[in-house]
Image (cartoon, one colour):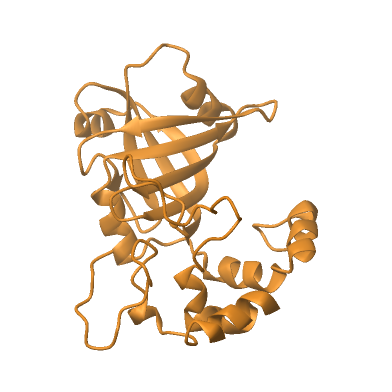
Length: 225
């Protein structure tokens, strides 16, 4: 059984014909942060932290800071501060109880998101607290799975994502499904739409989901992501 998927995941994947695509995406998950991922996280001003308590009840919280408030202490480990809050200590208590966490980083300006699964621990060591004046403690996360998610439903401020289905259920075809690494893993209907859109493209031609096509035309300047 894939580490990311259990029986219920497989049942839904088979129902919707996405098992091969799900396997391809799972195979791309990794435990060491790649340079673009490190740069993305180091520039982040927020993250969403999901934790689970000893009874299996999950919760999610927002953590914010200046760019660079999330730092790297190893190839697979990142750290961030916990500042004074409402005193419930739901997230930190959950970390102390079960250690299991999920992190979600989102860039709303250039739709992009990155997910991290791992194990966390709390630190109140002087060296760690010195990194973050005013922090109650520091959270250290050892990443087990790092993977990028499609950003097409991320809203740009007050402007809704253009990928939301309209009243007739119509929506733009996601450009990421045209990337050649997914070509042999797509469900039949998606594979046909890729051909109708002009075929597959290389990863270097993928420009994200914000623009009307999501693919860089030959000779066009690359847009940063």
